[in-house]
Length: 176
Image 1 (cartoon, helix red, strand yellow):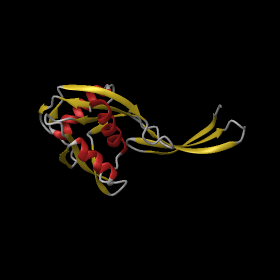
Image 2 (cartoon, helix red, strand yellow):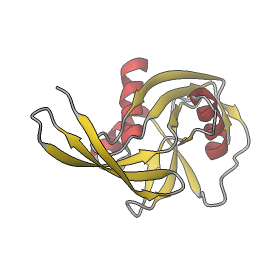
Image 3 (tube, rainbow, N blue to C red):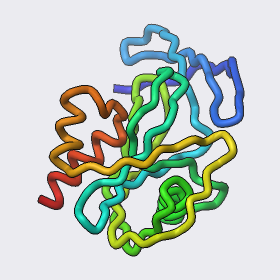
């Protein structure tokens, strides 16, 4: 199967993304339109495991859903930054914890239907105290739960974030 972009029109450009409407030629020759949200930078996220095997989470407001959501720490890569450095930085900034060891899990495309966002997922172990440094518009509460509690929270709708769910199930698969 082949698809061909016949034209692209940028309809919006903001601080972290832009939106395009593309005219494409489908495999049968017909034309169709696709809207795409293009993330200007990739992101990385980390599932931090405390010394007692509990998982450390951040709870923060997500305006798109008008909810306080429970998530793993994550952030956008700075210019020229590699994913490993991003998760180490974001972990300390959001939780005040430094990672003694990180382990790459996988890359995910959380919203393949219309968005180019790519998130690299990691685990963090051997955590030590660091210094929390939140952005001026960032308000975070820290919470920790066992793996079993986290899985139950997925099933009862308390954890809804895709990257967090993927990391929790991967952790269960790899480390139990």
